Amino acid sequence: MQATSDKLLRSVAAARQLAILRGQAITLANRDGAWSNGWSIFADTNSNGSQDDDEPTIQAQGELDIQVELYANSPVAKYIRYLPDGRGYLNNGGFQAGTLWVCHQQRQIKAYQLVLSAGGRLRQSSGQCPY
Image 1 (cartoon, one colour):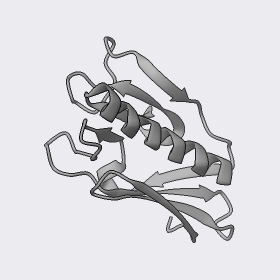
Image 2 (cartoon, helix red, strand yellow):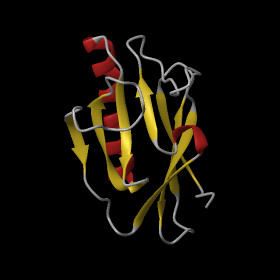
Image 3 (cartoon, one colour):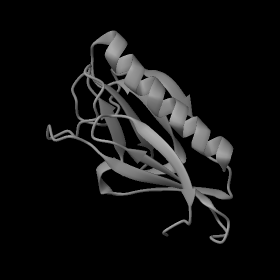
């Protein structure tokens, strides 16, 4: 689980850095509606939060280990989108802040919590899976 949490942490940091360096919206979106299916990073040229055919993948993570489950609250349920100022924004223009949990199928094992701040940074802590 620590490895999955670290991968997601690195991917979010990469998306943020790319948005700043390229001066364009970069989105990290889950695959097929669930973070446990993996994710991809792409230049979100039309700022819709989902990857279209003309938006090539910059980086991708495949499906996670069967024993690891990833959950997210509403603001980050489908995507994390960065603009060139390094902050996360929702498609409607509001700031994006939220929490993702990396959990083991057996809930008694500690979980990792990844919290996206309004400033666009992600911090990691451990605790119990709320799901």
